[in-house]
Amino acid sequence: MTFTEYLKSINACSDAVEWAANKTVEEVVATCHRGDWLLWLASKCDIGLQPLTLAKGHCANTVRHLLKDDRSIKAVDTAIAFGEGRATREELDAAYAAAYAAAYAAAYAAAYAYAAYAAAAADAYYDADAAAAIENRLQAADICRKYIGDLIIQKVNSIINPTQL
Image 1: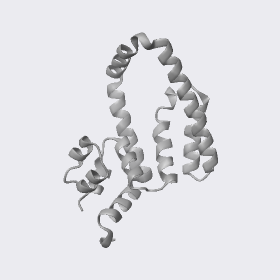
Image 2: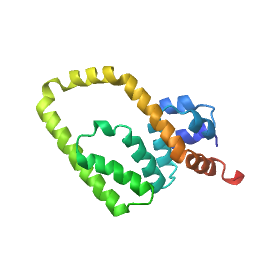
Image 3: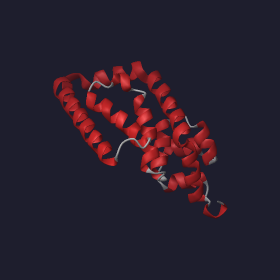
Image 4: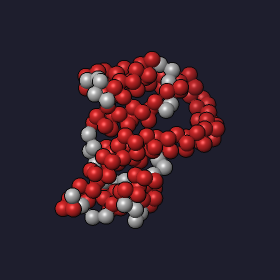
């Protein structure tokens, strides 16, 4: 099985499949411009919760300055601590639940207060921050390469070429 065939078999989005066409997993990990794609792939090939959470925590930490609720900040810190073996699964789950509640409350309040012009505001925000979003995806990809790149390569190769390892 080729890497491209593997991506199709796990239902990768068409943009990712097209971008990765005829590349090896090593080439994809080394050159991918989107951290979200690498995190998704790591999740699909099951590299393990602890390293995946470590990478996710560091990716989330890149937007720490945008987090307004202490529960969200604590969730990022707990994710990194869990990934490094300094927090338990129970602590991770509790931090996630608290951050989810904070995000839900903020989203509900924003939707209620700004429903009349939310779409226009979202378009303006996207246009203003498109370059920042692209830069953040690349930064997240670099984080993924650092923390889980080798794990993705090993795991995918064991799936697509099980007899060659």
